[in-house]
Image (cartoon, rainbow, N blue to C red; front, side, top):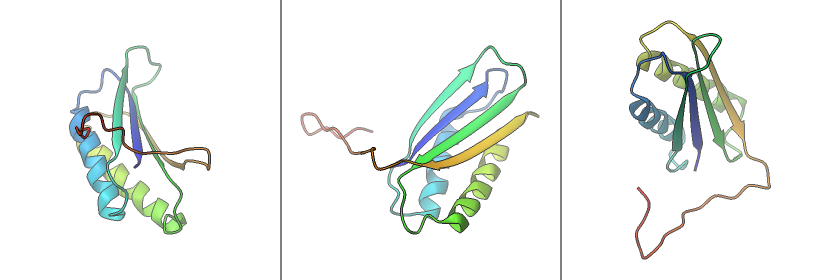
Length: 114
């Protein structure tokens, strides 16, 4: 279950939930076993340069090698560019959780999270 965090200058105008959905679709297209991608967006009012940063965190798996990372970075860069119609600085990173991380779903009264 990957995480995607989108941090950006609040002067950028785009649909952050739509972008995060596309990030999830892009990850799943590369890695069908990845599961849902929990996405969060953080606009920032106090910035020095107009900027967007997308950070994706995943569990390490044997198939998520250097070629996988480069291919996913390229696809995610294209996704970012397609959603942002303003000039800005852009950064993108993929990192992997270490052995001290677990993930799962907390279900209460049989109701799955959306």
